[in-house]
Image (cartoon, rainbow, N blue to C red; front, side, top):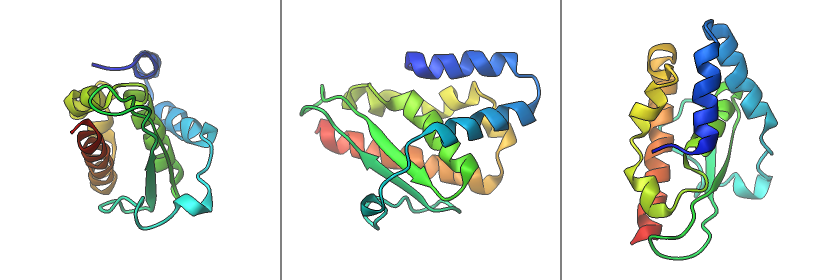
Length: 141
């Protein structure tokens, strides 16, 4: 299950043969995101397991399993900011219950990220997905 925004990214990536173009697209997506205010760059929102600094701030609308999940995020690395934007496209707008059922590795594999990110970046991406799933699971309970 993927959102329309994520499907748009997947479609764009199908037309980009060169990985440099794909990296530029990811970086441009990160540049287009609103930066997090300093007040949100705190230990409670920091994602552990990332080589760069990453903060994810949930914005849940409603309560229970039907609550709508959204998050904002930021990083000190441009490629990671772009990966946050990709994850926002994958998850934002889903219910918290649906967030917990998304097969993120399979969806991200459609973009070819598995084969083109360094081990550190892949670990960081996994850590972000785990944090998102944990937040959603807590809200759905």
